[in-house]
Every structure is written in C-alpha cells, then in structure tokens.
Image (cartoon, rainbow, N blue to C red):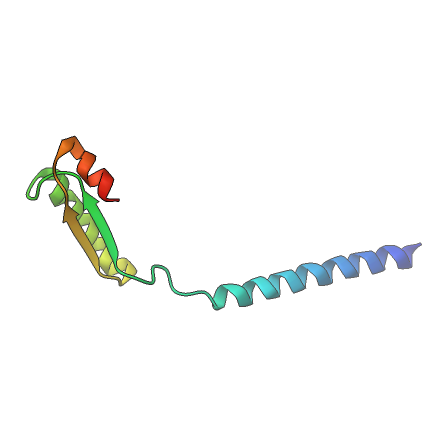
Length: 86
C-alpha cells in the first residue's frame, strides 16, 4: 500500500515539474510586450490639462517600456470623437 502511495506522489511531482518546465519554455519564446509603438488618444484639445497630464505620463511610460508612444488629440463631441478613434 505504501508503495502505491509513494508512486502516486512521485508521479504527481513529475507531472507538476514537467508542467512548470513547459510553461517556462513557452514564456521565453514569447515576444517582448509591447512589440509595436503605443498610441494614446486624448479626446480633448491640445494644450489642455488632460493633454498635458497624458504627455507627462507618456514620457515616463516611454522610458519604462522602451517603446515609442504617440499622443493623439481628437477633440470634439465632448470626448466622443476620441472614443470613436479607439
């Protein structure tokens, strides 16, 4: 009886180890995120407080993510035009 339990525990441990090994191989093969430039759409006019805050955050994001970030202003319709652009 003890041999069966020990065998079951060993089999379970091997399955867990194999799963962890395969998942780490799959993660290392993935592309770096993000893999293309980032576009942030602001639904209000350039020079406003929303635009300035977005540009400050975008500059910090560029340094952290090491990806180019473009801030686009799409004013009109109380933000509806910017929402539609996304």
